[in-house]
Structures are given as structure tokens and as C-alpha cells.
Length: 339
Image (cartoon, rainbow, N blue to C red; front, side, top):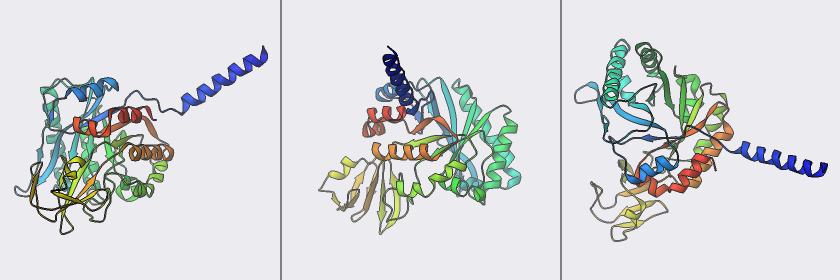
């Protein structure tokens, strides 16, 4: 009888260890980065099946307009569908916006940005408890960006603030600083050199990530992890970056009458050709960059093993039917479950 009890106890302990190794979460979520919020049946199914109750919704961008010599908002969201229970507005601020704003005008910039956030939220019955800002700030704009965040907190008392953080801002935090926010979202993508002709995949480069990821251990802000689902075509002409095309899928490049494969993800345009609204010239080269489950999961496990201050949830970038179909709904589920 004692032996049987010992066996049962052993099985129970093994079960607890197994469960303990799984990454449980109650706040897995998506970014939504299109300018019109209207979910397809596929997108709604993914939200439902993964019990997504929180959405990081891109409200608008703040950019510097060179022609007008002023900073202004663009790509303001239009909401045409039912939103999840919790919406966290995300505002992307171009670094050039801070480069071209004096420190004395930062308070006014924050005032205008917050006014527009409130306008979008009030027009769509969105309750805001958290704001997230996305900015690839630099050493020269650190003071202005951090002052912007501090001003935001003063102008919106009680609001929770979060900020996106690139891996280089973690490794070189002594130079770039740690933003005055409640929490961070570590961007585990866009880590390569997009404009470099010799780059293999600027979206997800595990070898480059290894040069930075160990510095997560010493990062003091609590953080979530953001992972990519997307792909795109990077178009080069005479080895110079011409443009990005987010609509290109790998099947487009299998047309041998128009494209010649040069490697696993490089294709030579054989003739003048319109592809998803953009013109390709003969001899242009397209580097097709993608996120696949094996690489994304490897990045996730690497970050989990390297970090010490992470919250127990992830954000996937981003919710879109084409992206979902390419990445696979089962693969999305596996990432959320931590498999």
C-alpha cells in the first residue's frame, strides 16, 4: 500500500513539474497595425480560439513632414468593427519628430498627441487605462522622448505607460537610457539591417539576436515579448534599397516567366512588371523575408531563457488574415501556449 502511495505521489510531482514548465498566460494578445479596423472571419476566429481579450491597437503615427517643416499625425485609425474587451492604444512616433522639435515645444507636442488619442477613443467608446508609445529613439533624442513620456504622465494622471524597446536599446542602455514608463515590450523582430544588400533576413536574425539577448537579464523594467508573424518583399535596384512591399507573398515569386530564383529568398526580376501596385524594373532583386514558426519559436525560447524580469504573456505582430494564413493558425496557438 505504501509503495502504491509513493508511486501516486511521484506521478503527481512529475505532473506538477511538467505543468510548471509550461508558459501559462492570461493576457496573450495581438498588435493591430492597419488603418481600418475591420476583422475578417479568419481574424475573428483566431481571436475567439485563442481567447484574446486584449488588443494593442495602432491609433496613428506622428511623423515629421519635410515639405511642411512640421510634425503631424498620419494614418489615423478608423474603427469599423467590434473591439475586444481591452484596447491599448499604440502611437508610433518617428525619431525625426523629436529631432525636429525643440525641447521647449515637447510639452505642446504631448498635449496635441494626447488630445488626438482622447478624440479617437471617445469617438469609439474606448476606455483607456494604458498607453503605449513606439519610438526608435537615439542618444540625441533621448532627452526629448523621455521628457515627452514624463509630460504624458503629468497630463494624464494615473495612466499606465508602456514603451517598445529594441534589442540595441537594451544592450546599450547606459547610452540610450531606460524610458520612464511602467513596463516595456521587447521587440524580437526588425533586428537586422534592412537596407543592407547582403542582409539575409532583417525581420528575424537569430545569430544577431544572440549578440544582444543576454542583456535582458539586467534590464530593470518588467516586460512582455513581441514576436513577428509577418513577411515582406524588400526591393533592391543596383544593390540599393528602393522600397518595401508588404503585399508580396512567396507564391508571387514562383512565376518563372517574371522571376528567376537566385537563392532560397532572392529573386531576379526578368522584365518590367507591376506587383501589388508597385513597379519592378528589369534586373531588380527582391529579397523575400518571412517569419516561420521554427525561427520565431527559437527566438521566443531564447528570450525566455535569457530574461529574468518578463511578464507571462506575449504579443504577436500583427493580426491580419493574409499573415495568419501564411503563418498558420495552429502555429499561432502553439506560440501562445509556449510549445
